Image (tube, rainbow, N blue to C red; front, side):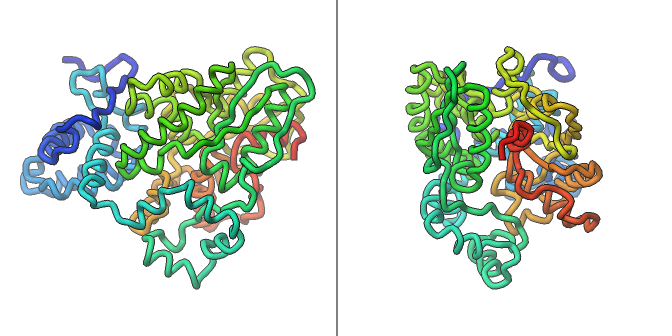
Length: 442
């Protein structure tokens, strides 16, 4: 037996259709096996709140071992997992192919799938995850919805907190009255070098379409033909709640549409890293026999990954100019989990004389996790090192590959009470928007 694995981590298919997958006794047995290994290692103690909670449970038990920890107390460990995958990708020495065969995030997913099957996921929580429906409903009355959800609204946010369990101080993304799919296409002026189908994602379509506008403009600048595609959400919000059946249904719908574009020699770009991670890695583990899912997985690029690929092949326009300030870039956990390297940092360093300060700490947001009343304070605590580093950089552009993580970092900076919020650009969230500025695209 070796101490740790030197091979690259591999993941097993998720056996969500097998009878034993949702069996409470089988899940408890596996959690005790995995938690006992974690207890003896503790390398992940500073990654998220799951591991401190687990170790506190053990250390405070009668025997100071796992055997005197009650199974009902495991829920607090599961509830703290944000599915960032950093324990699996960067810390754990016992991931497959090691014989201990640990995959902590997917074990947490299994527990949540059991809870979902048992009807323990709250009705309001399920409604929050219906991003497509929510976006379609909010778009025609975006101004009213944005007023209602504004953090400074002392009338509506306390009521929202009581009903939805979303913390009244948590920054929520605004909705747009003009979704990305309804905006005018941007065409190239010369014969295109490549063709891509840009998967808009629910956030890019309904919340901040300016990121998609910047991506399309940058691609057009580089003679890349773009077709905007958005059949449905990728299912990440449902995955967080353990609703694997819904994820599989969405994967089939979206993969079928995207596969048709691939047949026409288009490559796929996912605008948001969480969605790219779903298309590349999570879908194939849930639907390993679906040919469309396999094809999409093999032909999907993260946004920055595609730009860097253009540059490496000599296909990127050099008409960029230097910026009027430095850049603080947080590498989103779901970008790092794609195991492709710091592509956003590589992309931004293509800008002449760019000063890029990279932040490799978690923002603490974790999808919908960090906005909930029970998690918000912990989320800010986890994200404090990232916020502090962004603050210390004195950068004009504070961005993240994940726009939700970026806003959480900004909120963390405000909590530090050490900065004037006018010192940085409020409208630039994503690295591709910075690249667009370098190209003179407003």
